[in-house]
Image (cartoon, rainbow, N blue to C red; front, top):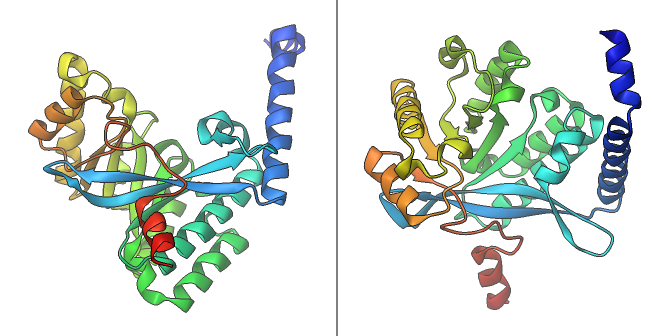
Length: 271
């Protein structure tokens, strides 16, 4: 088995993947150092009233030297297990707190990895932000992916209990895509359950996804969590999910992530 792995790693395909990963790491490291990072904001709408936003999610974007936006899916899988992933978590939190401070009428979720829990710099950014404006905690949602939360569930649970006292809420992101041990739900007490987009696609015509989504909604109701369906791209999907009773919807059908959201353009126009 060890010989097979070595051969695979030394194969042209394995070499190409490793070289691509190195290029991605270098690109992101340069962007972090040169502060070519932005948050793109996407609304999470109330299913029963799509004209009303429940909150916005801040999605990290990296800019290449020409200013072209590189979506998180193109780099996060490579950097999330590196210290560089913590640097990105720090940047996302700092930008999210700044947006909340400048715009008191918005509620915002910011993504983080369980690897950043207890990391001094990340915690310092959070503590400084809350110290400067304690009420910000009530409008901040921290999103942790299902796979990340499951790496250190006890640590995540303790972290959540501590910060919840500061008014901060928590969302479990990408539910259904990882390997959640359901016994941890009572221990975690997440406020928001975000179902992975793979279960939303074509749900109006997919009996399997309909059963799974109904089960996810039942879990959310049992543990008193707001239920969000991600990846909504078509009217038929939105209609089916709304009829099921899902609380909130997120996806390109309603709006694409934007580095210049409506509240920013309004603020610039008022100047």
